[in-house]
Image (tube, rainbow over all chains, first blue to last red; front, side, top):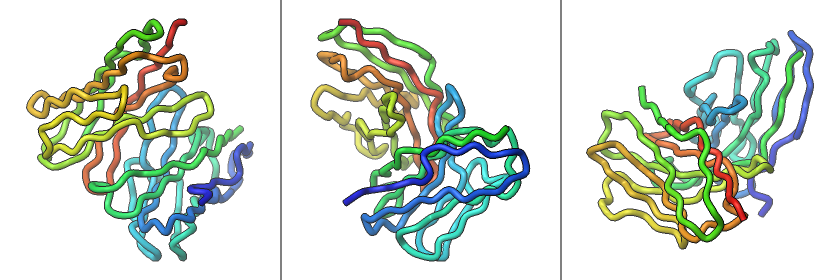
Length: 114
Length: 112
């Protein structure tokens, strides 16, 4: 199993541009998550999904959108990039509800908005 | 809102010695999970250890153990026989339902 994969690894955007961060897991996990990590800080939850077709907001959802059409994929969309969205983005997945299962993290995407 | 506080931005330990990283959290819930994650320079988040709040026994994983004090809302990580490969950022995290909250992290340096 490849686990959780994220693309791209790095990206530079101009203010106002849009992009989609891809996340795929091959572990047949129901739960998937998107986090951002700002320099010198811990991770903050952006959005999560408990299954295909079901998503919900986390702690910092503004400026982002997600969709979950399949179990494997959970893309994160930035519509109008802003410098405040410069961060490292992590995708994670778990088999069942977070209370009982461990989250597995992808390697991260470093995004810079200039 | 739940918050997680790591009061030690940086810690240093001599190789083969023991070090303890502190973590406190704030919650009104009684059933939740706590985690310690390690983040090396590669940025990969690696689960070190986890604790279920309803279990009184402290979790252990080889050289890693926790001191979980539920009433005090404290969750410290002890690393025994420290190795050079233990050098990394360590994040304490709290989870209730699907909401995971992380502390700001502690940078651990291991001196040879």
